[in-house]
Length: 69
Image 1 (tube, rainbow, N blue to C red):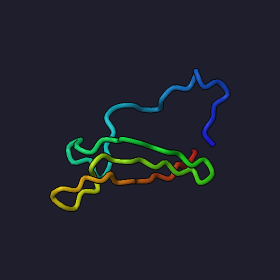
Image 2 (cartoon, helix red, strand yellow):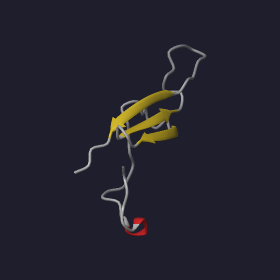
Image 3 (tube, rainbow, N blue to C red):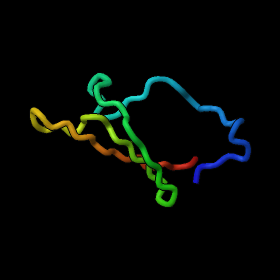
Image 4 (cartoon, rainbow, N blue to C red):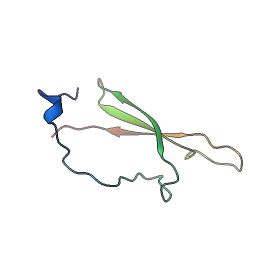
């Protein structure tokens, strides 16, 4: 579980533009997300990144395992 003793004091360790393997010049933005605190997995839904034909534009779900240092 992600938590902090004083959440208002938490500062980012880095910032800037973030990309993912299906970015395609920022054409597939994040349209939704979920975090499973039991398995520590972050799920992201990418707009239109699941497209395989001419007319379909389904989102693509990618996941990241969150590992605490």
